Image (cartoon, rainbow, N blue to C red; front, side, top):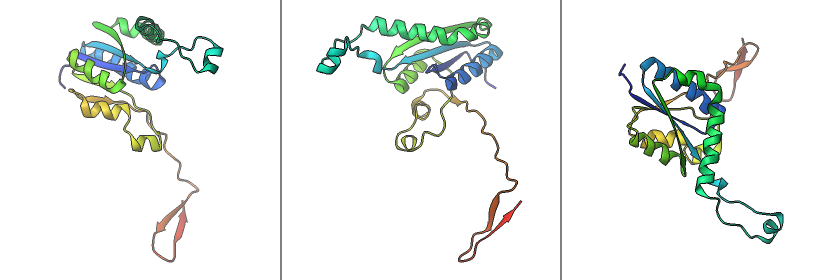
Length: 180
């Protein structure tokens, strides 16, 4: 296996991204490589409604200051990383970055800026119709990334087959089923 010098782990502060962070910490410790943890703050939190009467009047105040949004996102990232401080201290170099904007594009940009050799992500499963219409963030990053993207997913539990009817003849007009 190629010796990795820098690994990028983007996080959205969910349990799915915690799985990718743990895997990234383990791989970076094993490879003695640097780890970059990226959090892209959503743009939804930009608007602040000042009071209830302004909400009913339909008047929105100005945007929050950019430094406040980034400091809130940084404190959220610090809170997310607190349980993993012991494993992060074992790394040779661990840095964190916070960006604001579109998630997939900023992940690709940071991977290029940092010269990352691997991006580790953990996608969500089963998004339904939305997933079929527009690709998820992991798929977008995989298409645009300058380096390989490792997708870490949890294993699905196996389904027991005992006592279920399983069709073994798919002919027409007669269908039969067997129980195991």
